[in-house]
Amino acid sequence: MMYKNLIAFGLLILLPFAGISQNFVDALRYSSTKIEGTARAGGMGNAFGALGGDFSATVINPAGLGVYRAGEFAVTPSFGKVDINSRYLGTSSNDYRYNFNLSNISYVANIGSGNRSESGLVAINMGVGYNQLVDFKAKALAKTNNAQSSFLDHITENANSRYNTWSDYYEELAWRTDLLIYDEDNDEYWHDMMPYPAIGYPGYGQSQRKFYDYSGAINEYTFAVGLNFSHKFYLGASLGILDVYYKESTYHEEWDAKNEIAYFDDLKFNTSLRTSGTGYNFKVGAIFRPIDMLRLGISINTPTFYSFSDNFYTTMYSTITDEQTAETTKREYGSPVSRYDYRLDSPFKAVFSGAVIISKRGLVSVDCEYMNYGSAKLRDGGDGYAFFNENDDTKALYKAVANLRVGGEYRVTDAFSLRAGYEYYPSAFKDMALEAEQPNSNFSYNVISAGLGYKTAGGFFVDLAYRHIASGNYDMLYPSPYSNFYPKPEFAKFDRNTNKVLLTLGFRF
Image (cartoon, rainbow, N blue to C red; front, side, top):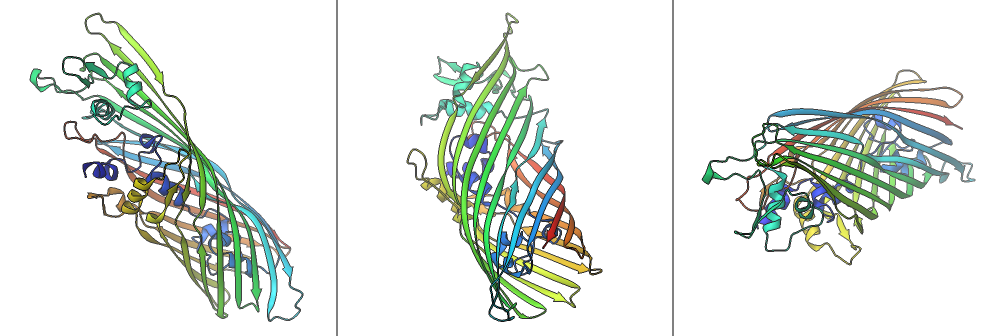
């Protein structure tokens, strides 16, 4: 049972230390897609499930494609800054990254049905386009000047384990760089920072620093059809093809800044994980307009069926000074590159939507999106592995959530509109799981947005949106040892704030 507690509590988002074993971290990362499309939708909190008439709506409810009464071409670049503030053992740090993206490009063709009346099948619309669902790009830093545990604790415990936990990606590197030391008399491994109370040596007290560098994105290419029946009832279906690229590099350092630790001077441990993959999903939806001022929508999104390939390797560096000879030795050793193929089925989604049109000048729209993160499934490992234990952990750790999106628009004139929105995505983590509290259950993903739009009589339109995104998480810089013989590392807290501007340029014809 101790093992399960450590999985739940000590490896919440430590993907580099999951390393070459895929687990619940991957299930959450690739299931947590949001909407990053046009500026009109982004300014209104992406609450478009009952509205339609915007290509971002096809990501939520493809019936929205049937609302179009003209063809359209649109493109949306975006620019933003991701700020991550950390707090670790009383020390605050900050890092940031500027990002430029293409959030959307889309084309909609309005095809008449041949029915000249306004009843029955009035129009068939076809759409093809691209929307960005996740932007992984960010940088983060955590550091302290007085650590009371070490990454080498985890390495040393694994080296001493009876369960054959020696790894070419961790223990072998520490051994080859003289950071892991073998005591022949006692038949055990140890490291220089470990305390020795018998001789009054307190150990630890070293400085630590860890840098995280993330890049990549999840992009969806959509092929959709929408049908308009009497301008009252709309049906739609879409096929989504997803392209995934994720890269994570981490740089963990420990050094004896106080010059109090015998022999040990510093260590550096670098990891590199690169994931590429593709996926596909299907969506069907309907929008009903019982009266002119009210629209109701519902859509069903199948799981996204992903196929992934991971490439992973690690490198370790050390500097050690012999106290007797004063000779300094530097070592470097790298692991082999591991490649592993596997599949993932993300959770099913259902979206329930409603919108009220007010005096043909304003509107308020709401989407409620249901999904159960615990239903994500890893499948078909490249070596035949079935991921039974990992899927059990996913089910135990994650819960069902109801994501909320609210948006509004007011037409100041026939040409000029103002918009605002709010999005709330609760944490996927249960409060308690695997007999341990889940600190990340307290973090949600919140978006506040505002925007404006201008359209000309000739069909040209421009939309501008500002989005502020706040989220966060707790993380350990390295895994917690299983036993109580070693001190437990502390969590670092990361607060992420993203400020982004989207600009859509489009033409209706």
